Length: 261
Image (cartoon, rainbow, N blue to C red; front, side, top):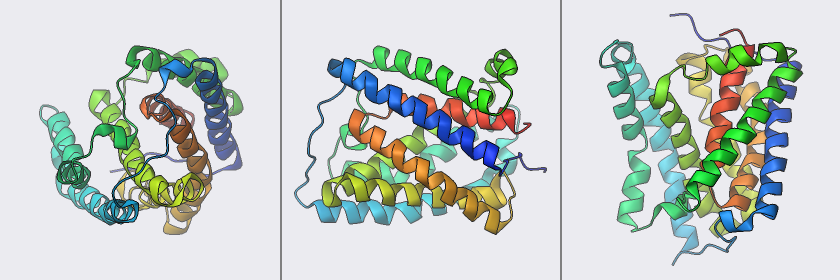
């Protein structure tokens, strides 16, 4: 199977950083102008911050390991026209089982993953608006703004299950960030979580979807870890992952579109 193209270039990285930094700046502005939409920024604390953070860190290799193993085992089944989406959905749920198990075991709610349904309709609307602006800027930097309408027609590619997978990545990062932030503070937590998040992409970059050489995959992950740290700061300030979930989906779609697939 031929892999999906993932471009490694200055133009591509400029587009990624521009789209994310613009949307994060607008998100911070929205938080300032509409504070009632967001949960209050609070210092989080568990009975033992260190223990919860270490448990979360221990779950990371489990999530990555299950993801890599199940992707290899289930790839043929995911291509089936009838059951492919069902298998894909079950795989996603299986991959994040360690996080769900920890939430149940530790009796912790979804708020400890920066997931809140308060003012959900407003946050969904804001997420779509910011995502349209971010993806338009992405295409502008890439010299393809005239194809913005065509890009919008491709957003349904992969269907709801693929979008759910993108959302679950944000859920997993929120889970880790909350606990690391409680233990060592947001600055170091954002940096560590960003590095781990991008490192977890390397197996997919090399042998999953994109088939990049290992040095190129590591370089791509390192380049994106910087913007990921800014994204996690946005998660912390908003105390919510809903808007960031939409941005993640749209910007990923823009990157695929401008890379030729």
